[in-house]
Amino acid sequence: MIRVLLAEDQAMVRQGLKMMIETDKEIQVTAEAVNGKEAVKLCESHTFDLVIMDIRMPVMDGLEAARIILTRRPETKVLILTTFNDDEYALEALKSGARGYLLKDADTSELIRSIRSCLEGGLVLEDQVAANILPKLMNHSTAPVEVDESLTPRELDIICRIGEGRSNREISEELALSVGTVKNHISIILDKLELRDRTQIAIYAIRHGLV
Image 1: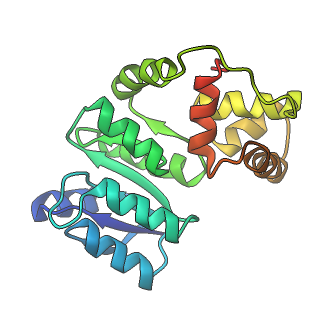
Image 2: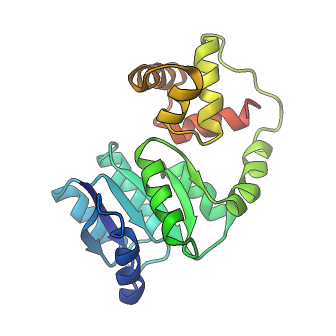
Image 3: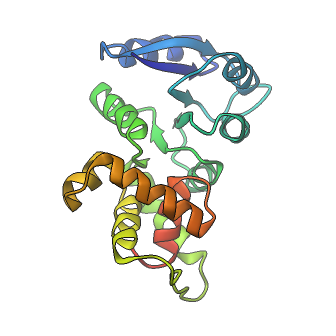
């Protein structure tokens, strides 16, 4: 069973999202929070596979809560779900370590796909959001930056595919590798580049012109 913490301050929205999420019998909303501070506290005392987090909430917003949760529980995945199609919010969400940024007008099937993609290691960005923020990520590099020379061709292949939002399973199928081998390569890449997670690998790929 996939354990989800749902952090959303509006009760009716939270109830509606819970119903959508639990249409998949393998996913269960095991806890709910009405603000970021409550979400952080719940993550300290319970283990969740995924936190679905609104951005604008009272007491503590979703971005700050995501940063704290991912610092203390780096194995937990965070998916930002919001009404704001805002590229700066999306950028900050990725920098915080979130696995995705999805708008609340997503339908049930898209939400379920996004949850599963996050859990498989994919990077979830709605097309409209991606179109807004990818140019900004590329523009943050004012001059071309060479990739680290210690990276092998196979590692570069994997970095490219992470930058394109592929999950571990998709990468394994495309490169004819086992999922375990892909995970090992990713661990080596993180060590070589001194990065925290695969979201930062995706940003690295974009900034270095690999995508």
